Image (cartoon, rainbow, N blue to C red; front, side, top):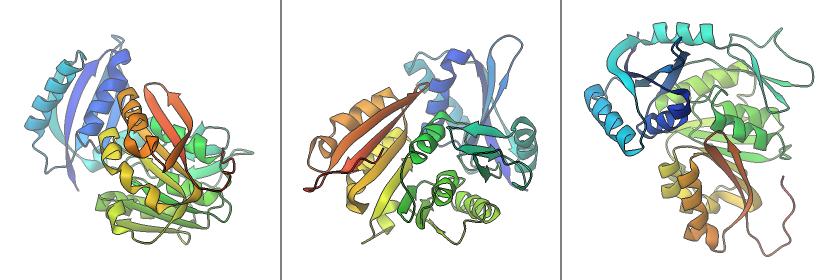
Length: 297
């Protein structure tokens, strides 16, 4: 059974989003949160066993000081994946997202469907994207308003595969999903099979740079804000004319930096929507063309 290093800390709920963003930027593979009787939240962020967890601890403390986030009882340790999964399964219950989705963290979707909602089964494992995070929910809310029937979607940093699965269930005919983490791709493949959309979703381990000559109607990038800023210039070349680019996982500073960037201010992209949920932002762009743009939202 695989071992995972973890960083555990407690803090006031108002600082949880900022602390979560910090460990996300540091490469956490998942976060488990538990409310305490004191009113604080106990958070445990999991990291790959190859990471020096003592260094992670020091870096986390330093970044929290820079962001004026007070943390208490900060400690490190290791835990078997089996124990972590059992805790996650106990805590997660079926829940709605947006106006169209119903997410079930169980072993099958039979008997869990809710009228007028699209069911999605997700294995709660060490891959980002169970539908509970605000950045994922923002993407799902954008997707449910797009016309995807017969279209093509590129999901960059697919994690659990939740956005790729949602795209296929909304009618996308061709979905390509990638992630640099082979464990995430294994989890996504399992989830695609369970949701019976694996024939329309192609998964591969790697980055967007590995794609050449292919364009898509929709590109999804629910990633760390710094990573999105670095890769932003590569996205338009993979977008069809009048296509839609959805960027999520952004904090205020990330969104502001992207909107000021040359690629957005230049001839490539037009900002359609700037959505917010908690401290997280989601930017929706269309690719500029010489033809009149159709409304995508």
